[in-house]
Structures are given as structure tokens and as C-alpha cells.
Image 1: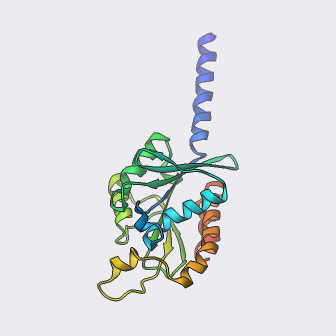
Image 2 (image 1 turned 60 degrees about the vertical axis):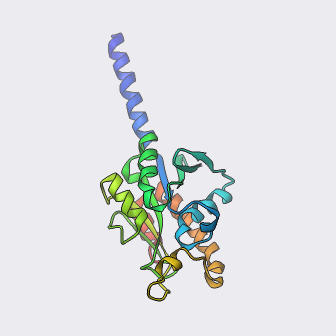
Length: 209
């Protein structure tokens, strides 16, 4: 009898743990560390997480392979991660924190810039190729899959031939700067909706907005 009760209790614990796991989300903002990169187009992932953290009075702490803030919202826990590995080694930080916090692949959202979308355009997809983006390329390699959700933020491709690197690592122009706060508000809502309403609802609500 005692063994049966112990087994039942143990089983209940496992179910509760599994339920808790599904309420944890890893939100990864891609970017490069260093003062010279702070306001560059390539660092939009960092900027979106910084905006949400400031809005919710959260603090980033230095952790292994990055900086992290923990955001609690409607029974969910969002781990906001800014890798410090530089863009082309982002996968190392994603894999480490995914494993450490036992976060399922479907609960990962990676925020990145996209040259193929006009400025501020929102594109949320459940999977896809790296599209030439070194951060996504490394994440695909380390995770050995392309099946994780990514939020692509359009930065447009308004640069002359041979100037792509300078453009991506360049700062926003005045017109873009003026429009960023509104885009940041929407981005914060995307993160919340991803955790509380699911991927399909998030895509339906925000893609093309």
C-alpha cells in the first residue's frame, strides 16, 4: 500500500513538472556585445529585449554565455536571453540555456534582423532556413534543426553594392529611429502572445502588422 501511494505521488510530481516545463519560454534576442554595436540594425534582437525589460522593470544579469532577465507573465516564465558569444556563435548560448532550463524546442523564440523585409516588417515563422544570417546559421548547426520559431524584424536592404556589412552594422537613420518605439511595443506584445496564446495565434495576429 505504501509503495503504491509513493508511486502515485511520484507520478503526480512528474506530471506537474511536465506542466511547469511547458510554461517556460526561452526568448533569444540576437546581437553583438560591445558599445559600438548597441544602436546598430544587427542588434535589433538585443534592443527589443532591452525595451521589454525596461517596460517591466526587469534587470539583466550576467550569466553563462550571455545576459538574462526573467519575466513572469500570466503564469508563464520567459527567460530573456542576450548571448554574449557574438552573432556567429549564438547557438552555443541557445543550446546551453535550453538544456539548463529544460525548455522544449517549441517554446523557443529567436528574434533577429532581416535584410529581405522592409523596415519594421514583422515575419514570424515556425521554421525556415538561415536566409544568410550568421546567427541563425549557427543556431541551426548547434541545435541540428531549423524547426524553432523565429521573429524576423525587417531592416530593409537600402544599401549600395558591396556595402551590406556597413549597412547591417550601421545605425538607424532618423526616420527609422522615430518609428522604432511603436515597433518595440508590438514586439513586446508578440513575446507575451507567443507564450500565452501560442504560435498560430501569434502569427495570425502579428504577421504583416
